[in-house]
Image (cartoon, rainbow, N blue to C red):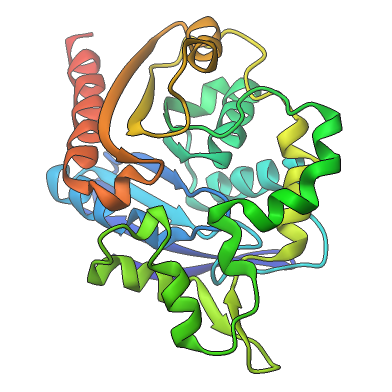
Length: 292
């Protein structure tokens, strides 16, 4: 695994990269890992290592999306089209013709919009417990200031007087259930001490505001897609009812559904089963390809 930075004009994207012999031989299969809102690229470390170990042909990129982690945090520019443009530039930089897209939560909606606009660039689509794949009603915008304060995954955006205070709050969050050394590493990578001495998340407030104002009001699936697709549903995740799952069945005509242990962050709290599930799906696609 390498930590790198990609310069995209006035924007820098930090990213993790795994590349093996297949890349050197020109036989690579490309995988793009997209984290959820307020997370960072390190959440994919276990999956990246597992997939890279099991297939020497994978070229895996896990970026900190703009406004997150160590990537640039401009004052504005966190709308749907901004993130889609970043994906396009990632493809261009690595000279990718196709890629398997694996996306969690909010970024699963970005991935669906990307796949709808660019199906020829997507080898497969894996959606992990997506957050609001349909459009959020406009009147919800009145409650955004309240949501910012009560949504658990945004709690670390508050200002904390010292490291121990922010760590104490982090230990109560679902993504850090168990508080393993790796989870603590993810947490540490995602926070920083501000100039005034307070501690808080690296996630940009401007990114939070514009994502809710723009992306959450966009419908993720609007056209039927025949891409091989996997919908991963953690047992304690967000999508538990038939009406939540129905859009995926309606628009993804080549869909598999996998249920796994854990919560919304199954890849962090139950990584072994989760990684096996993703690996099996990708391997099944390779077997189908080999038969042709």
